[in-house]
Length: 376
Image (tube, rainbow, N blue to C red; front, side, top):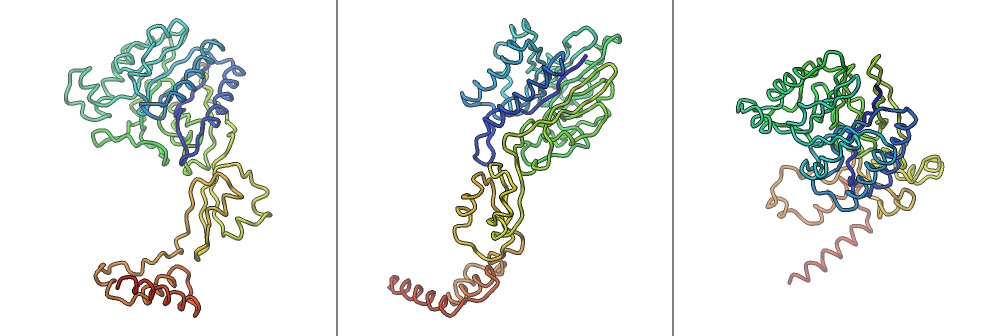
């Protein structure tokens, strides 16, 4: 059989305050088209459909429209689970009759032990869970960590295996050996966050969600699809996309997605960033994280840059931009005893890398005099 593996849609997510609705809609339309072009037998969504457990009405409407398009209009089966960002209770609403259209949404641990039976494949849909859910299900308080809980879970699944079929697991967790980015919520349960890949060896393929990069893990048959949209600057260099999974013979094919607006990191001086020969080749509608190499203050820096790059999501300076840490270690009382002009001169020189000019010292002296007179 052939499946499309995606995850971590995070509908409702924002990038440093910027709305990503159109980015997510663009990615979805590409996913839909790939599913149709590749004639997949179903779409796997491995958790975190929403970005938060209480999504906004607009986010609910957007996700509902996406799922309806895939399942009701395109007649594509959907095999989905809840992730750590989702509200399992809310996603579960309506699931009793979803199956009539081959839409399987598993949000409870106990559902994982009843596989979805397909002609030559068994799909085990394991939603995100906390160890206490496993303790309750197995009546075993010793299952205090994710790894301890996973052992009986896998054993119970394997006991359901039909040897004549392939066995796929859909899950949402952190696998040992994976690499995280800034936009993922760390899953550290009971002091142990990761599941060893060796525990998953009984499955013919494990479709994972939670980490946002496809290269977070390179196990042959255990993969993250990554998110379809870049959600942080740490994902700037990631290629987003989905996996096409063929079960017999087993084959994985990565299909890239083209972003509506990309996320880029720029490190340059203010003069370079405002030079047309520098910025004209760029798509200035992209989201930019900027690191300024100038070590002197620049008035209205962000305002000036946004006239050229409207979607700046972060602005930082290189390490040699000194903001006066020369006073580190001195108490407030010690600093207050020093001459104000000496303090000002030291601060300015540490930031601008040059002393105050004669005019600047005069302006500062006049301002201090006025301030002191006001105190009397």
